[in-house]
Length: 136
Ligand SMILES: [Zn+2]
Image (cartoon, rainbow, N blue to C red; front, side, top):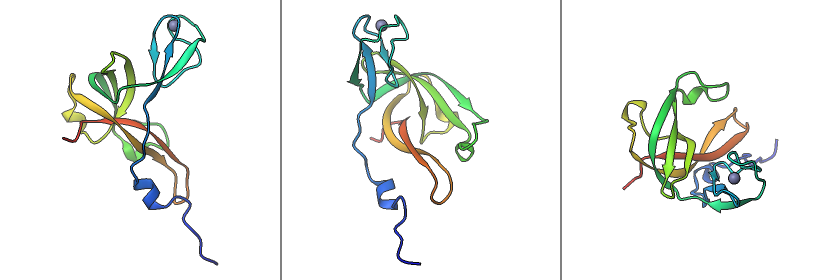
């Protein structure tokens, strides 16, 4: 047994990661999608460009998921919200750092980059965008 480095060092996990909230915009009808798509869900055009979305928005409506799919059990319950971003685009995203009881329609939220799934010691870790109430 030699010295083995952990596959994903904690420092890396906890580091603040610079990121952009990426979406796509249809060059034909202007529809904004998140996550980015290959084809426009409104008009079917494939003439889409990648854009950076604003990281702030407000909750329009939300659903509390109390029976999550396998691999997400330790995050149960979690909240999926319809969020209107500052540019008017509407996206679905998971909320974090907030109790289901505390979520309200109209509350302001901001995007954060978070680990959202982990399997075992050396398991697969996925990262993704979640939204939370802004820390002020
Ligand atoms: Zn379109």
